[in-house]
Length: 260
Length: 260
Image (tube, rainbow over all chains, first blue to last red; front, side, top):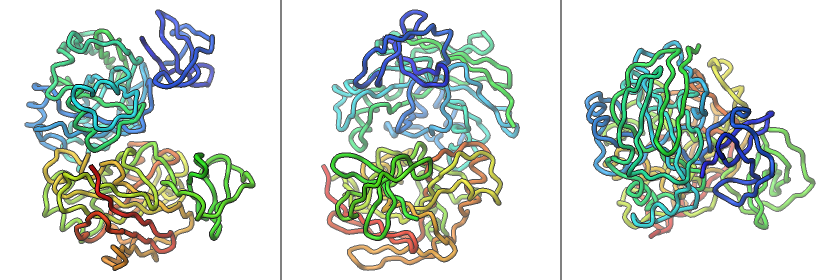
């Protein structure tokens, strides 16, 4: 089942995606809800990030080739993970499908995509075992963890390198039925494929992260966990169109735009 | 003016604190609101963290003695700041005045308080100059950035070292009229004062942080910025009562409790 969050006529709704239509609900997809009876063509609404998380978690380095590359790069967050120590991103940077990725004019030349599986939490969770960890997961979506590599090296934190406004597009919707063992993540820049990797082949998988995290923190409905990326992005520039597809979920497309 | 968030009879309200009473409002203190006419004794309500921030910012090392000590300690976040690179804390860890600070049984012996001034944002802010930076500030409260120093050294991120559930008490309320040049931060453990420092003598002050941050990120109403701490805490243990006073704001008191 697919659940979208969208704007129509100035109001924000959640709804179930069926084919080319979205069926509006009252309530939240992961909570009590009922259909309102209103429906709209997907083409007539503006899709938003499918959830605004209370806490925005991110695994960071979690795939073999990517971590080898960035461990060599240095800077905060470049240490090779020995255990699933979760990190964070910031809600100010969140945006949706088709929204511009605005690049400030003082950004360096190495602005990169990072194509990530996003776990959406549906139930309050604390102290889940590895075997039970997926019981709190509502579904999955796609995130682009846009990063500026010079700032990532020189700043003390990842704040502007990863959390500049508009740099965390998420969407296009939440898919509740995903077989991660079969899923593949593919990125296209201006229509040309730059990478194709098995989504599930992570250093620390989703149950491993959730069981480790919930030893100390409570996960809440709407929290998201971005699971990291594979490979190395080419340098992106204003005008470039970046599409991230995860098979079985959908495609998240955004265009880079020159900012102030 | 003082604004509290509190629970009474199972419902959560915002209200204006006047003496020993709180006057309930409809709406948010930093937005449109009106008095409901209902009031309660402060002693009859449970104060909560005065705001749940969309983004939870934290300056980290921002006072001279504290940063010298922790730069020597090593671990993530221990690099001496050369510019105001903001960091983050997580909403799962937020709690309120008088709430227990629950220490998991596998925590090491070095569980410390960090007494911090908290800036509460009242208006959407982007690209503010240093001179205009305080125009987006609604008021100030107090935070205790509870930290476990062994985890802070060995983990790749600050997740459980600083964001374990209940480890971010904030309150008791938001004070809108504070003279930071005169304010002093004082900490008492079990009634005995452990430090007394000038709140405003930061490495990078509030306008410096806000003007630097809003070059890249939009601040939103309800966002908080924890401004860092001075000195070094003694090791705390279950049963210890930690009080943080910032003159002109109030006192945030919490008791440590042994957890699972």
